Amino acid sequence: MRDAVIVDAVRTPIGKRNGTLASVHAADLSAKVLNALVERTGIDPGTVDDVIWGCVTQIGDQSSNVGRSAVLSAGWPEHVPAVTVNRACGSSQQAVDQAAHAVMSGQYDLVVAGGVETMSRVPLGAHRTTGQPYGPGVLARYEGVEFNQGIGAELIAERWKFSRTRLDEFASASHEKAAAAIDAGVFDDHLVPVDADGTKLTTDEGLRRGTSPERLAGLKPSFKEDGVIHAGNSSQISDGAAALLVTTPERARDLGLTPIARYHTGAVSGADPVTMLLGPIPATEKALHRAGLTIDDIGVYEVNEAFAPVPLAWLAETGADPDRLNPYGGAIAVGHPLGGSGAILMTRMLARMRQGGIRYGLQTMCEGGGTANATIVELLP
Image 1 (cartoon, rainbow, N blue to C red):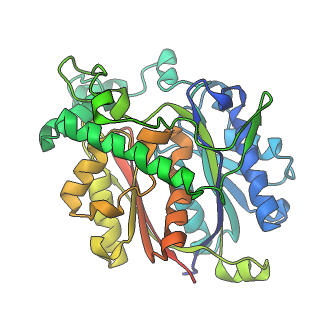
Image 2 (cartoon, one colour; image 1 turned 45 degrees about the vertical axis):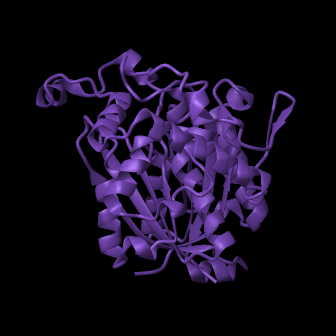
C-alpha cells in the first residue's frame, strides 16, 4: 500500500449569506481554488488524474456535476475528469478520503479533492421542493418523524444536559478564537481572495466581533419554543470552496514539491438518523482504533460546529482535551458552506499543525442522515 500525502491546501474566504460571494456561481468559485493550486504548486493541470468534488445541494447552479463544470471554468484541459460526491456536510471530507484511497491503491497518482457550496444561491433544503428525499420505507421505519437537524441538536442538548448558557458560552468562544486567528494572520497563507462585483473578499465574512453570552441570550430559539438552539449557537449559512492536492511522496518529489502531511487513517460511521448529529463519536472511535492511536495522541481536533451541542457531546464522550478543540473557532463564527466545509476544516487544521508542530490531527463532521467522517493526518517534517 502506497502512502498518500497532502501537498497543498487552499480555500476561499467564507462568505456570509447573501454577502460578497453571493454573486459568484459555484463552478466559478470552485475554479478559483483549482487555479490557486496550480499557481502555488506549478503543476500541469493536464496531469491531474481526477478532481473529486463535494457538494450537497446538487440542484440549480450546483447541478449536473458541478465538479466537472469547475474544471471547465478553470480553463483546465478538457481531458481532465471530475466527479461530484455527496455525503451531506462531510462531502468534501469524503472527497479527500476518496482521493487518498485512490492514490494509496495505485489507481491514481495526482488528485485534486475539495468542494463547494453557494448557499446564498442554492438554499439548504431546496431539494425538498421537488420531492420527498426519504421515501415511504424510511418514513415508516421511523414512524413518520421529521428529520430535522435543529431538533436533533435540541435532543443532544437535552441528553447531555447542556444549558442555554453553556451553549452560548461555547458559541461566543468560537467567535473569540476566530477573531484572534484572523488578527494573527493564521489563515493568510492558504486563503485565496475572491473578486465579486468589484469587491475583493480577503477574510471570512461571518465573524461577529464582540459576541458574548449576554448578547446571545436575547435571541429566540429556532426549533422549539422552549428550546436552547438558536441562530447564534448554530452554524451560519455561507458560501465557500476549498481544494487540496493529494499525491504520493515519490510523485511530490519528482514535481519538486514538499508534502505537508501524510493521510494516516479515515473512517466513516452511521448513527441514529433522528438525532442525526452524533455520528462523529463512533467515527472517531473507529478511526482511532484503526490507527492504533488514543485520543491523547491527537494534538488538534477539528469537530465541525454544526450546532454547539455537537462538539460538546463529542468532548464529553471521547474525553478529549477541550484546549485542543477547534483552536481557530469554527462554523458558528465563520460559517458552514456545506459541501466545502470538510476541505475548509482540513486547511484550517493543517495550518494549526504546522504552526504548533503537531504530529497528529483529527477532523470529524456530523452529517445529515446520521453519518460521519473522521480523518487523521500526520504532519511531515
